[in-house]
Image (tube, rainbow, N blue to C red; front, side, top):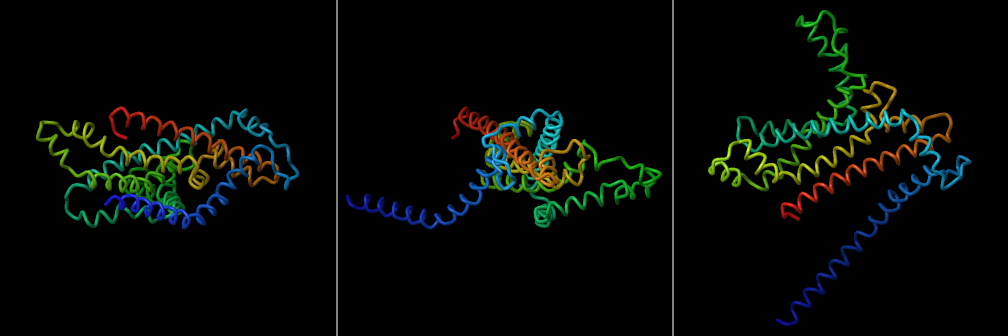
Length: 302
């Protein structure tokens, strides 16, 4: 009996070392591909591009030129506006959908498959659907004209190609609400409904049950899902490029324009834009996680 514990510990250590060795090739490939690209991108934003005849590393002038432009801050505001608005709306709708899914209602099995359909459709298809449905000559405007609500499809309110970004936000929300709902629904299934039922027996109303019982339980799912969709939204390119209102563009579109300029040296400015996006997104996500961790410690949950 005295030797069994050390032998078991040694066996676990051998299994752990074997697992690490098996993962080593994958880790090396990911480190070289992604880590190397990240380092090269930062160096390029700091003036290292000998293939373009530019090698002034370290040179912060590209960031200085970028940040000194008023259009950069306008683009940053647009980028954050689209990302935050879509994330909040997706979160609210996702929570409501997840809460509905834990209840029993007719055709629930069919509904559980239908709400996942947007997850299987690419963003580009969603953008195309937005153009077909929400454009001034699209299906919705024609239906309203047919119903007599407007005299001509051209009178339909401008939803696409505006800086309000209703089309962009609609595509994000349509695509991301099922993802949020799926994440939170999985958490709700794991925690069960016993605590909610106990709170109801003790006299709590629906509002109190949600904010004092359900919300703290699903908070980990909320944090993880919003981190993912916000990180995607702030770096997304296709929807703002196709459905946006033009100048000022979002930062990913600004970077794309730099990369496609006839002057190849402007790629360094484009890389400075990409690094700026990464720094801003990283700072926001780190602060978001730090606030959540502080809340977790305050309630005694690690």
